[in-house]
Length: 180
Figure (cartoon, rainbow, N blue to C red):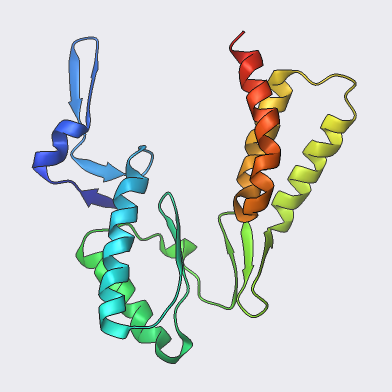
């Protein structure tokens, strides 16, 4: 599951350490650039599908995980076209994470295509509730305790855009404490 990188772009993927030089010649999972390659891959596939099938749908990309909304009238041709294009260009496919349905779990979120609702997977919701309950029991919260909690809350509010600004003062305060 690797995305081939053109030799002319290898110069952008070099690292040196103790007089050893490394050149990364493929975009693979675990590198910071996988989101870059997958976003271009998904954009290419979306353009081909739009030219082929027309219509409106949305596609979400989180690093190398994609969530596709396909038109029901031509679902199977679109799905096959998508998978075929991923295989042709050498993109990564994780079959054990591939699912079809009107209600799906994706990267810790639940999507309901019938009611157009989004929420957290039960395990994630319980994990966050436990974390917040534990933090609320402290008489003082250190930056070392607050920082991971803010990271987890920032991940959660990705799905609820209007909540993001409410975390900013706490994040700024925590960053200021870490830099003093």
